[in-house]
Image (tube, rainbow, N blue to C red):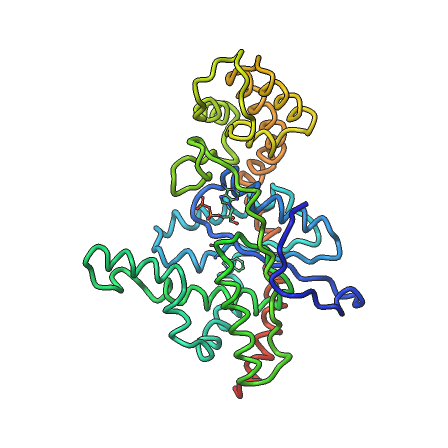
Length: 350
Ligand code: ADP
Ligand code: TRP
């Protein structure tokens, strides 16, 4: 199970009501999922969904992806693969609703309404925009060079995702904490400007950083570092990538520190506790070589991932099945978002 810090106190009334807790998160379709995404985001979400008192809404943030202007065919393909991957990774269950953000028009409608309670100064302070400005200034360019309104107003669209679906809790990585604060901020601003009880204030579930998985070079596994191992890689390719993980040159006989080894960190995420303990012991006493650890790691990852990869590939070759899952998720998401939008529109005098 994932450990979380709760950004706001638990609403005490929740336990007493029969209404399920609504958990929502979005994933950008920026490329194939890697092992880090799975361990840090997807598996914890599947764990949360294992609690049947939760209704989990998980969506492909395809509208958000537009701000980097991807090629349309590439974006469409990435979205499809992401939907298949999510469904294959333990999220294909009755209390999980998988949808594409763009297929829930009330989200865009909500973003348009929220623009009017969003101070421009708030968005000037958003991390992603500030980083773009800082890079431009450092390069001697116009501060807003290459910045479109999709990037600038990204936090408003993200607040719309959350508020339209009337979410109770939003599990995200630490890098999204500011976006969650903005969503809470806009809900509060709306309540003050119009009336309370229309938009629910979401609670952030910030994943603890202990789950950060290292990549091929030992740094945090990340698309942007080029050190990622693709979650759905073919078995041969997966083994080839695992053999490329950088280790030091300590000979097999010599004792090694398991806590500083990338291989052990990965093993801890995928192997059973007995295997991990045995390998750690042999690190301390000496007598295990990195080649052997890599082979065990590859076995552990393959055992864990093979069923998911099979399901993923079946879904990709069966568009009708994929579409049926999406149709259900999108219908449910639309029903929720339409209700919220209707309340919001009326509260604002439309
Ligand atoms: P990337 O760094 O590859 O671009 P993202 O920033 O898109 O990955 O991350 C998507 C989700 O996956 C986030 O919830 C993030 O916390 C999680 N995640 C990404 N990389 C890792 C990692 N190395 N270890 C644990 N979780 C990760
Ligand atoms: N911004 C998130 C990310 O880059 C993705 C996202 C979009 C999201 N809308 C969301 C996450 C709503 C949680 C809730 O990872």
